[in-house]
Amino acid sequence: MTTPQTSGQDRTIRPGRRHSIGWLDAFLTMAERISPFHLNAALVAIIFGSSLILSLLFAALFAPLVGMHPEAPLFEIVVLTAAFVSVIIAVPAVMYANALLRKISGVRRQLRDALTEATLANRAKSEFLANMSHEIRTPMNGVLGMVQVLDATALTDSQRESLRLIRVSGDMLMSLIDDILDLSRIEAGRIDLRLSANALIRSLADTVALFQARAEENGTSLTFIAAPDTPERLVYDSVRVRQCLGNLVSNAVKFTQGGTITVTLSALPQGAGQAEVTLTVQDTGIGMDPAAQRKLFEAFAQAENTPVRDYGGTGLGLAISRRLARMMGGDITVTSAAGVGSCFVFRFRGKTLTPVSGGAADVVEPVASQTANLQGISILVVDDSTVNRRVACGLLAPLGALCHEASGGEEALALLAGCQTDLILLDMQMPGMDGAATLQAIRTSGTPWAQVPVVALTANAMEGERRRCLQMGMQGYASKPVRLAALLEEITRALPDARP
Image 1 (cartoon, rainbow, N blue to C red):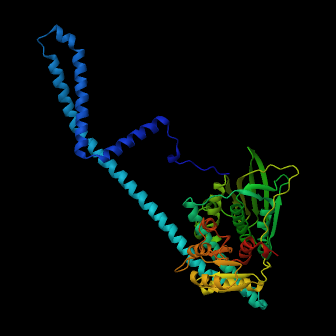
Image 2 (spheres, one colour):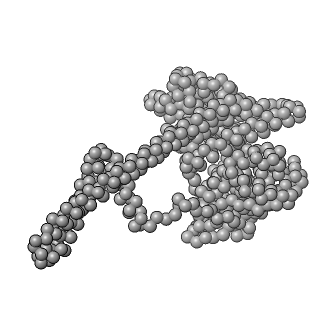
Image 3 (tube, helix red, strand yellow):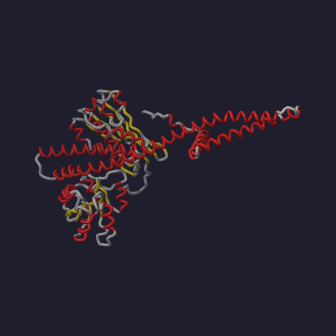
């Protein structure tokens, strides 16, 4: 287990020193606001006033001597000496103070400019990533969507295998896009954990099971083991935990040929209703030398690792997973030896649930299958892209849905006025009347279809987009590229009658 080192900037500042720093900062701020002439005059006045006070104190101390020798002009000598000394001190002091203040002001100005530039650069990066994500997801929706449409048709074995390769390659590209977006969100502090009561053992076992087929292709045995005292349910961020575990198991499968992979789950109570969950992923793969381990959790570090580079990948998964694990109060550590295998330990914290005597178990909302009952349901697909409309209709029409198409908000409103519609799939970014404006026009139309369920269908997958769409008054959200299972889940949530 590694312990994060504390940098010099993280040292605790004592209260007295913090007060002094605050006083100095306030003085420097005030000094920047006044002109140099007034500042120098103030410094001279302060020094001369201090010297005059000191001269008077000296005169008072030497008053008995003056009384003994009234002919000695001691009082005048002391006053003149103090004034002379104050003038001698004031000139270099003012010059030095003025130069120091100019230098400090320059540094503070540079820091403010750098902070402003960094803020603008970060904002520009976020906007660039959001735009690029949208622009890439839009054509990928056509590629991966039509793959799903073709997969439901009669194909030869060779054609189905070619289709599988297209889908796998597209999934890899989308995984890379999602990783880059996640890394950007973490660096910008824009990822929030979504804690809720979720199944623990079943959820993580299902995550491991997703990689069973790939492990069998490699001739590798993949096993999941849960300790007997592991709680069935826990309050934690199920999505982020599954993401971290998926990255670890995916890497283990990738680097293990004809060996074994064992995933072990355990939990240890921590008091105050908390529990520390530990997931251990042990494999007998190629392993790593110490040099590779030191760079393992750096973003894109894999590109410099020649033995690992042959297996593909970007090196982002582990960097993201460790940062997520630390956000969840845990960490990811590794022990490995080249040619022997690796052992990754993933720890995170969750909140235990208090069992209710005689109460019913929490119900988990089922995920819609690909055989949802859409027979006779009228769905209006609103999207400015012909390809995106064809993808949505191609996925839903075989399930019995009656699909209608509109290329924009105005056309959608005209179709709604002329035909019965049970559900709208609405693209959010369209020229002219966009998704938000179209939704507002529908909700304020005062017509029988004003409250028709609307599911957002958008290529904007940035953090908070789902919440924003639901707050607008939509009943669901699906991001592009569209996955049929995810789309049916949103449709059945908006239309309970569509459940099989």
